[in-house]
Length: 335
Image 1 (cartoon, rainbow, N blue to C red):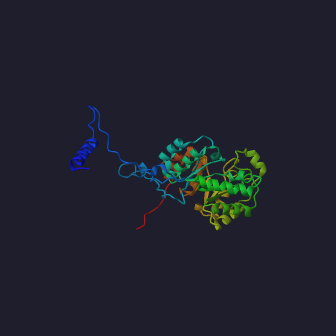
Image 2 (image 1 turned 135 degrees about the vertical axis):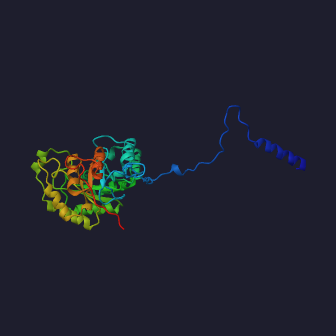
Image 3 (image 1 turned 180 degrees about the vertical axis):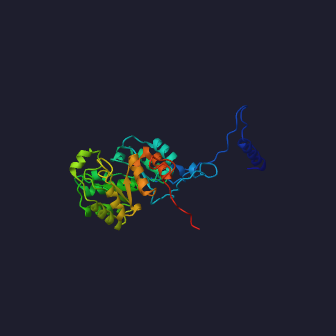
């Protein structure tokens, strides 16, 4: 190729590649930039996002000048609040996003009651679990293990159940036996099996047989109750094997009873550290009593519809006649 031909070809190419002027009235397109594909791929656990500061803790631009009880930062060992998710009402990603977007700072755990998660399409359930994790909220299966244990091959069913729970992103597997008679040693083996699958076992223990299914008080009374020492001995055995926390069943103590068995609660807390137990308290009068008697550090399970009321009580900014202006703490900062 001659010099003249080469120059002519280069000039022609430059003219072709010269940016075109936009037509009158139209804006030029921005320069092309390749987009990363990183956002298209996610794991079952969403990345944790920092919870925005609530107005009550904002001393400069919020209501931080109002006296209130501070809570430990997540993950907490005390003042833990677990909320019931879908059961009495449906709950999808948009609903949960509203709940956690406004009250996520006060929620530590999300529990699926009655095996409700098995009714979800897998994609929607993963969205709920990922959303909870993004607010530093652990997710519990609730007590569906009780139904799994009734399968013809319970050993195989339990392993399949735990494997799928791990795959879905659950953190905690509640082990409830309110309707079953299970030997204590088997209960401990079950907790150990949960641990081997990389999940946290949360035994649900109580004094009432037949609890957990909206049973009438008269029917439960006819069944009788266990001695509180059984609960305490079981709790000690679970603690010795490394169980982080146990749920105390409300039936027979504060639910479906003619009078509350506060003696059982006091007996449990005489022998078991407060941080090792969580009390079912899905009734405003019940969680009001727990906070009044044991202070803001007590770990409680409530319905998601009650999270605002309980949080106001923990923080000491509202309450009932016997708790309004009376819930306080003394937590001096270290020098």
